[in-house]
Amino acid sequence: MIKKILVANRGEIAVRVMRTCREMGIHSVAVFSDADRNAMHVRYADEAYHIGPSPSSESYLDIDKIIAAAKKSKADAIHPGYGFLSENAEFSKRCSKEGIKFIGPSADSIAAMGDKITARRAITRAGVPIVPGTTDPLTSDEDALKVIKGIGLPVMIKASAGGGGKGMRLVSNEKDIIPSLRAAKSEARASFGNDAVYVEKYISSPHHIEFQILADQYGNVIHLFERECSVQRRHQKVIEETPSPLLTSEIREEMGSHAVAVAKAASYEGAGTIEFIVDENLNYFFLEMNTRLQVEHPITERVVGIDLVREQINIANGFELTYKQNEVTQNGHAIECRIYAEDPDNNFIPSPGVIQHITEPLGFGVRHDGYVYEGYEIPMYYDPLISKLIIWGKTRDEAIARMKRALFAYKITGVKTSIKFLERIMNTPDFVNGNYNTHFIEKNWKFLQDEDKCTGDCKAMAIIAAFIDYQNRIKEVKGKMNTKSSGSNWKSCNRKKSMLRL
Image (cartoon, rainbow, N blue to C red; front, side, top):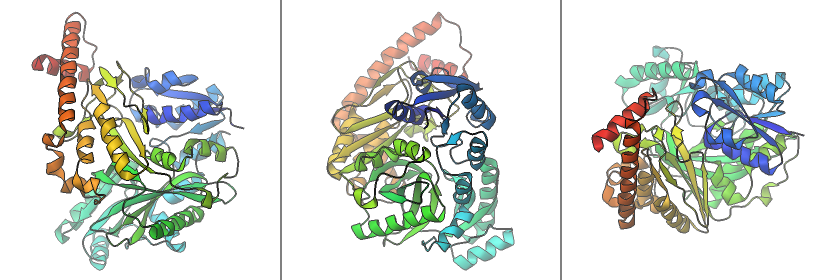
């Protein structure tokens, strides 16, 4: 039985995994970089070990340092969270070699599904529909021209080892084929160390819908229904909800069956996500498989009532799934908003800095997965995600109304955040009516940039928040006058801006 788990991650996901560990009576171990010495996950864990400098390449992505920390702490298992090493087959293999349980799929499954070209081949053999395109990497400019002309424009050129929108290019004109190919290959090489790319037919009005699956080592696989992830910006998810307002019960059942088939084809074990692209006529195609826990997993937990991290740990312990497919049902509606430390009014640039004040939303149906606190400095080295706000309601309308209330109550000063931008999305007619796809933000950009779309209450609270921020900045500047510089470029920049504004 697993008694101690090292969480090879940081931020909100590390804290979230540790909470379930504490419920299960399992000791948790944190690892941290220089930038995260005072982070919440370090404070929450039972033990914590320093693993290096702030850049992730020298800390959270360093397999040797993670393994050394696991051995030093005598951890039985490692939970990778999401991002960083969570979909690294070599890391999974190394854990096995060192006698440490990797809470996730086998290295073979990660490798098979992590390479999207290999995955497309396997899925085709399993009888699951895939987006029309290639199942081999493009080998040359001439090959690309020939293949793309055969498929027909528009197409997506995509990195085989890709994710997060990197190594991806939409091609609508023949003259853009070669430049787009070279750009995609270059970005893929820089991001993943692998410049292999392939081509898919571009679906003009796509919905991004994914199915959560669980699989044990005995061949039992179930799905926990879908998540609608079509509110995106530059291929990055912004808001997710479940159930999807698009799917019919018949299509939902059919897609769920295909999601299970994908997991079985990969001999999968653990929690994973099967992603589909769905057109306006409800034709759906396999997109990719994420061999890890997803950022948006809490909305599934809220609607089906199952702790996915607990299930991951139970599966790693060798237990059979305790749920049959017909025992899993959807109850109500859940929405997740991702709160980022970034400035939506300034091209969404990251906004690292010190959290001066935070008021977390509370009340019935509200879940807040975060990791920041007053006085905490958000570092510039990592993803700017601050927290995830998860709302449940009996109906979609109730969930939207509750999300508006929670966003209204959520106040953070000291850094710019996406809270107001998310509030505008909640007021956008296309979202309220469930009439949206992955072009939602682009289509509604003017509406989303209009501050008048905030309610009167929103404006009043913005004024109050600004006044609080103003007072805090006065205190900060006065304090800085009597102290030496910390040497942080970000702090110096923020200090100068504060003085200028005052």
